[in-house]
Amino acid sequence: MFRRDGMGDDRVMAGDKDKQKEGPFDIVIVGGGPAGLTAGLYGGRGRLSTLVLEGGVLGGQMVTTDAIDNYPGFPQGVTGAELTGLMEEQARSFGCLIRRETVAAIEIQGETKTVSTEQGHYEGGALVLCPGTEYRKLGAPGEKEFTGRGVSYCATCDAAFFRDSKIVVVGGGDSALSEALFLRKFAREITIIHRRDALRAEKIYQEKAFAEPKINFLWDSVVQEIVGDQTVHKVIVRNVKTGETHDVPTEGVFMFVGITPRTAFLRGVVDLDEQGYIVTDEACRTSVEGVFGAGDARKSFLKQIATAVGDGATAAFAAEKYLEERER
Ligand code: NAP
Image 1 (tube, rainbow, N blue to C red):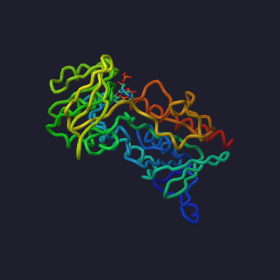
Image 2: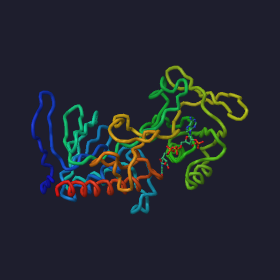
Image 3: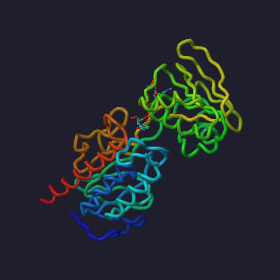
Image 4: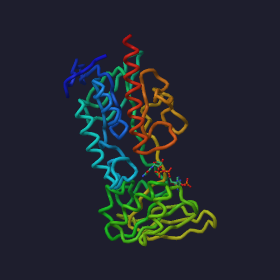
């Protein structure tokens, strides 16, 4: 094992003709959300050389969550940005390296595991895969055309553009309701369009949304088309029970119709289920020895920050045991 006592000592080993080759690290972690940052903390604290690669925003979906009130230890709640900053600080304090690079490919040849980004190749004794999820697209006409011009998948990123506006939120799960509750601070009126007459979201979100005068619901309804010119002007909504359609004037469409794992680059590398989630055992071991899966992209019963953190700890611990076994 390549134990490390210092902090931040990049192991630049050799350069190939195009890219730097670095490593070997004990653990290379793909993804810097709550699972990845926790695996980074556990790896670093275990005195293992540990690298986290995150190509997007550190914190993943956590960082764009306005108010988190179900993560223990914060009785007054905490913002996603604050929690991300604290997790990053803690991981770094134990020597975990964090690089802002997007992973393009993973190659496994026996015990050698190489993670490639645009900038370089990183060799790891063990890999922890935590690529997370992204919001699913509805696939309605106009959705792609108006993305960034009225259609959004991130309330905290875009809410300020819709101050005093009339907007719609599509979906009936935790994301739709929690994001609608955040958007009420900006928008004048919010219509939640849901395809059934019962919500999937947690009761606590339902209670808050039903009590909010700015929020109203269109039940048994789906968005058939998003219409506008430079920006969105309306959505055409179809009632799934009657088949009737009508126009709902709106300036913004926030889409929260489920999530999909960001695992396309893992196809053929580790076993994925039919929806693309990483299949693991209870110790977060994937189908490939020395490769672990954690967080929202792992096939699991519950997807929360608390469970992602548990996954990250489990995966890093299992990775450490794997490296120890390999040395014997
Ligand atoms: P989700 O739970 O899968 O809910 C997606 C919603 O979109 C459902 O209400 C679904 O309707 C609807 N939907 C799906 N496909 C649709 C379509 N084609 N047309 C119209 N509506 C459609 O997704 P999510 O809300 O993004 O949550 C994902 C995971 O993250 C969940 O495990 C959730 O608990 C977790 N999460 C937790 C929190 C929190 O704890 N604070 C916050 C956000 C997310 P049906 O109900 O009819 O299926």
